[in-house]
Amino acid sequence: MGHDKIRQFEREDLAQVIQINRTSLPENYPPYFFISIHENNPECFLVAEIEKESEKKIVGYCMCRIERGYTLIKKKGHVVSIAVIEEERQKGIGTALMKEAIKIMGDKYNVDEVFLEVRVSNPAVLLYEKLGMKATKTLTSYYRDGEDAFRMELSMKEVEKKI
Ligand SMILES: CC(C)(COP(=O)(O)OP(=O)(O)OC[C@H]1O[C@@H](n2cnc3c(N)ncnc32)[C@H](O)[C@@H]1OP(=O)(O)O)[C@@H](O)C(=O)NCCC(=O)NCCS
Image (cartoon, rainbow, N blue to C red; front, side):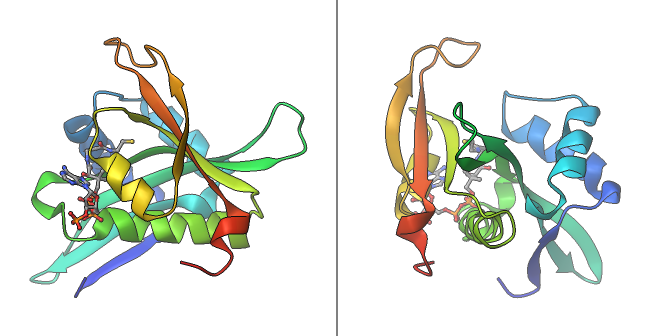
């Protein structure tokens, strides 16, 4: 990725992250939503930063939340939102964000699995499959416009130093 890096989100990144979210996805959130996820899960809210002509710019983010399953036994890492600006897509940044998020959620938060929801029509499904994630459920009319979602999961047992 040359002069690109993946690092933890910082408060000063908020405006850029919100801008990327609003221009990339129909699922948008108020600023406090990003802030509270960051406060509760500081290490797994990541951004991709590039440096061009000594100007730093955030080009993508991956915002994750640590959750418990219904039985409270399993710890799960939920990829709540991920996006990369249009001009920088298809260069591996989304994959790099996901790999780092999975690694951190496994190493630092000790999750048993990582999961996310994705529109059934979204080509990002392929990206997640390449990382070993599997669609385990179809969530009917999950999105406001009526589209279904796949719930995709990755058991950390399967990861064990694979990525
Ligand atoms: C999903 C997203 C974050 C991927 O970021 P990215 O930096 O483009 O990802 P990568 O370059 O690592 O892509 C890896 C693979 O994902 C798949 N993929 C992702 N987006 C794709 C697209 N729009 N068209 C075709 N394939 C795509 C491809 O298999 C690609 O592999 P390839 O480059 O070998 O073809 C980005 O496309 C995005 O921001 N999309 C809009 C927001 C969104 O849908 N977020 C996901 C919500 S669950």
